[in-house]
Image (tube, rainbow, N blue to C red; front, side, top):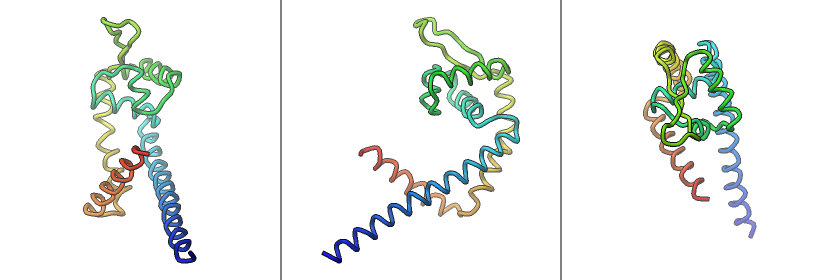
Length: 152
């Protein structure tokens, strides 16, 4: 019994430690990324919306909220703000009037093309603590963890 409890405690300890380390690493990375985005004149949410539209094309507003984890009220606020800055435009759906799409404008695309190379470079700096092989291992392990969590 004592051996079983000791092994269980060590296993739980490793799980808890992994959770703490992942949480701290995520927080530290996001603080750096957010500071970088803000230094380029956007906030993280605005950047996420523009990046999604830039890479995926026009998206229904509801879909944008789901993909970047925003409530419908928050997505409306963000879309209004970006539309006022002429970085995106709303497009009504001709087939379903309840659905509205957002599409990045030429100004929005130009802005992303201007700031993204420097942002990419900053991400390279942030992740420079791992070499390419270690990054691939981390990617594989985190994907495995994420997949197993989804099945719970």
